[in-house]
Length: 399
Image (cartoon, rainbow, N blue to C red; front, side):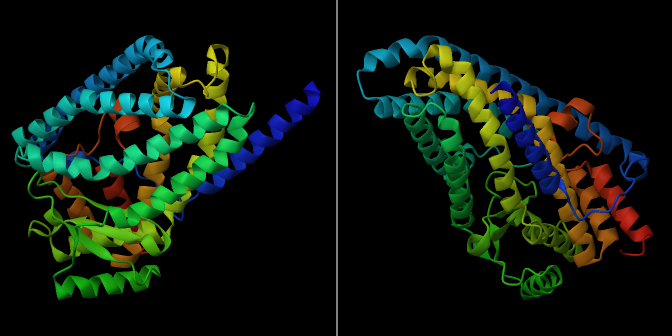
């Protein structure tokens, strides 16, 4: 029996590794992206400014992380006694505990979010518009809260009825994640506007044809009330797919070619089906994570006991923190692939280099951040890596 279990685990581990390898593959050729001197592209003053700004944000992130772990530790210590005294059913108690945990985490993170907003304002990256910032946060908070509570109800319900509940919960959790990823394509685009420039719309159609993603809606979100930084993102998949540009990209600080690079980058995410691949990663990660939660809480009554939910959330936070470098490494591979798509679609390596040089000015990104920041906070390639890719593409003759 023991040999059978070992064999099953070995086969499962091998299958996991194969799936992870396939998901991590990208179309980017093997490029040497090291060796460029950042002083060739950025002034000493710009580098000092970006470094000082980033150190402040890094400090706020460390403080917020410590505060989150502390709050979860206190909840895991004190909340179980109150849960057992509630007198509600298992599912109702789980919903109450989930709401308490979510509310606590939101209020714990609020001062650090406001501090980061002020820090960005202090460095000239936008107004200190607290109301507008809160409104923007609230737009995503409701969807996240609903998805988390749905996951809690699902896991607690299954864990209370089945011994090996994690085998049943994994495909359901992945299906729920896929559903919210699908719906987010429409919710994230709500309140956005269509592109006003006919020239830019023509560029979008041209780039879509080159990347074989014709018909992808490209929308614009007004964020100027709380930031001057530049961003764009891809959301949803299939018929819900949308590309959303922040209006700060279109305020005249960037050339038309640089705007095209950003659009081509986001369309590259669509062409490479990165959101679908992210769902695949959630499937790979969910099974061992849920098994570990069952193992870690079994002597306390298991995940099916609502009193253990604060401990479960604390364990998830620790696991998330420890595996963030791996998650960021995968994200950087996908972002690099989107950059490669942008090079082949926009065919403007000089504009791509200019765009990344401008990011150091408009967002105060560090071109070459220190190792710990790179591992835990950078889910995109560094500016120097992105510039090096454009240089290598040009050296290869645009191939």
